[in-house]
Length: 556
Image (cartoon, rainbow, N blue to C red):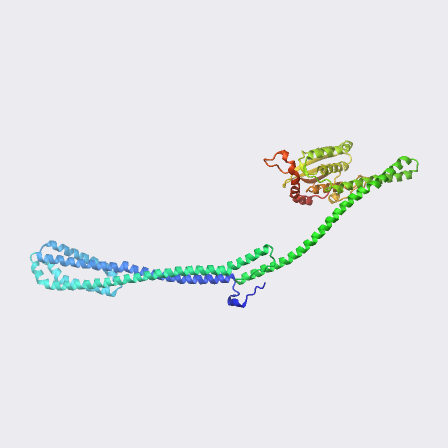
């Protein structure tokens, strides 16, 4: 698969996912910054116009109306005093003066930035002062008896002056109302602009989100999904299917690398398939060869029985009839022939028994190991009495296996322990038992015999291998080889404990009888034992490998 981008992809062909993301994030941030600035400007403008209207225009108009009210109260009070001469009419006048000053103090800072409003306020103050000097102050200063005369003399001038004040107040309020109306229109326009700005901002954000989602779908998730689908197809066995490479440059390179791995796996798979086919053929040949070899061993050992029996019988007859009648050398030759025939017969019988393991006796069921061990002990009772051996054992649990083969296992192990005893002390043999983590039983046959050197602890399990001459210790060298074959046939492993120094300790494992379900009765257990054998053997394959690392072998 070629990861080189096509010409149709243009200047963006070399852009990786990271670069696309950086460009997209940068563009999005710029757009959001611009939109945020517009939204901020619209909000600032609306807030500014609102503050102008609330904190300046409206209070200025209210204070202007208060100023008018204060001046009207002054004119009403001073006119009543001038007509009636009653002093109580001066109180509204005085209150109006105070209210006038208060209104002017409140209005003056509000119109400081407005030249027109400031001019209007100055005109009102000037005309009000002129009216007060020309009419109000002289009337207020006159005595009660003289007020009517003073008011009548100044009435025309007072009216003219106050009319000018009224006109100035009207102009001031008209100007303030006009500015307030303009501010209200500006606020409405700014609010509309703000609302539209935020609507556009929301729309642009939605569009940006949609573009980001679509860009990720087309540039990242889509190519990855197609690559994942093709990879799963390859994982299901469609190794010939190429992997598509689309999207940014790094995803195309990833697809190219995965496709290269697919091609490599395809080549390895083809090689493994060829090797497996060759191994299957070799396994079939080996199985056929082993079958033929077992048949040959059985037939050879069986067919050799008859001529060997004749040789043994006639050499024994020759020894009995002519023993002592010939010279000493002839008697020695006859003894050699008889001994050789007997050893050959023993060897052939052992070889026959070895070839039968796993072929003749293959009835796996629950086996009472205590009973099997007791029978094996009875078979070696003569040797036990002759050597004065002491044999002890733990309570042996039932196991899954063939009773005949397990009897051969115990008899060979006990015979070896009795045979290879240490000179000058009676044999002491103990059979221990421990449970393994994988549900099997590990048996340990310990003795106080001569022991086995570490370099020979593996060799002793090979058939016909002997560590001593036949004159020192009789035997054929098949005993422990047969033990190994029996144990491995039952799914266990056998070996020598390398840490035992008081003699020899043989360790081997056998499958335990599966635990009975709560509703199962003991009477129904035997019907299930045979079906559980193979599962138990498989469960002990790991234990066999572990024991292989520590065990070094056994004795002939």
